[in-house]
Amino acid sequence: MIPQRTLGPFTVSAIGMGCMPLSFPHDRDPDLINNPERAISVIHAALDAGGTLLDTADIYAPTWNSMGHNEILGLMMPYCER
Image 1 (cartoon, rainbow, N blue to C red):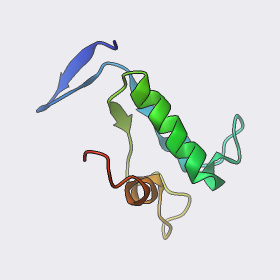
Image 2: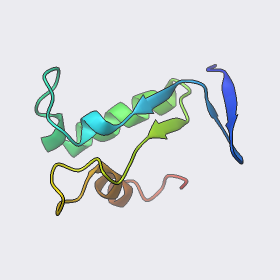
Image 3: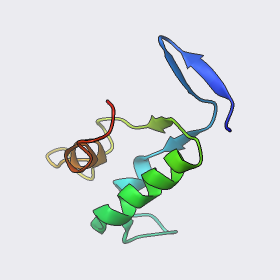
Image 4: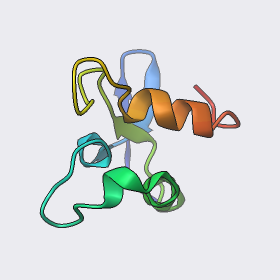
């Protein structure tokens, strides 16, 4: 089990997952941005490992007028707690 920390009113895992790579092409996995099913599987792997802190931000979008992973994954994962 990953140790827990208090962040304001929330209890979250001490180790978080940075989600920016899910919205931008990068050297290690340049096609991940085009594969939402794989992006969701990455998030599930983090949750399955005991992580509860997903580091996201509205600015994580490829362009100013496009949807980033926050909005896209939010639409694709309606069963998750928010």
